[in-house]
Image (cartoon, rainbow, N blue to C red):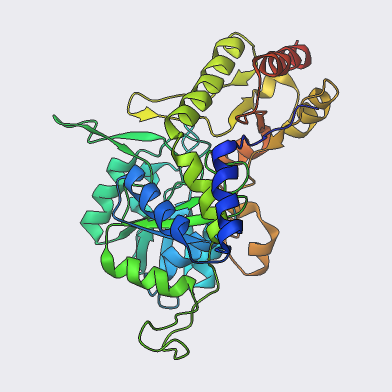
Length: 377
């Protein structure tokens, strides 16, 4: 069975982790932790990095930096992971949803302004499956209405966005370096992995100070066991940071491999009928975190049936996200009832992703493409 994702770890990771064990720096302090934070923040074009235990924790800390009041709202796509609304709800806020774009599967920026109310505090764009959100319209709305942008870049390590792409002087900027706050996951299926792990990035020193306190139980520097705020134990270990730092050193190679995988899939599958393939808009450099495909209704298959059939050829897959407005747990809380988002609903019903990990070989990619063709012929 060809797995959806298999990480690639090398001798540098082993060297750094071995140093942690040899020196005894295995917990949430050590030279690799600070170096990892500084290196990843710099790579993304941000000043401050705050490493945390996972991507969900990063979102919770980022939202907590806003000091939401009960009923404050954060606008986000319905087509995302549950961590996004969870971070808002756990901080006393209300998630407000918008649908996806047809082409990129990202949040439809044209729907956002209609959802802004006097209670809106932030917009949370989520770069889906490696393709950047069109950020310029959202940044303009944030400026117009005095909102915060919390950029979820968990699936977009190394992806780039042409900021100001309709202006005379556009500039390429990395995802995670576009918002007031940004968040990353370093789960095992991400381009940079620490097994579990995450990070908050910001240029704002006040947000950075608050985030560092929140991840560490809000201990006060001048008096450790004295608390004026409630925080979390969301610390990352030096061992995990050592793994991450080793991979940042070869980030250009990692991004190039992921882009090659995605481009090769597109070339092989472009003539297969009944499939919508990922795009790369002119203002984006996407990294194909996962190579997703969306079935056409004319195929007579939904994603579940397709996954079952292709598995018989030794190909593992994963379904696309189910929209947050279709999650039973939120119905029970009185959220999103009677809301309808047709693009996201279609993506959830007909979308899935193929093996896309860094360990994928040319032969395995060809086997996956042949299996797709056999199922759809």
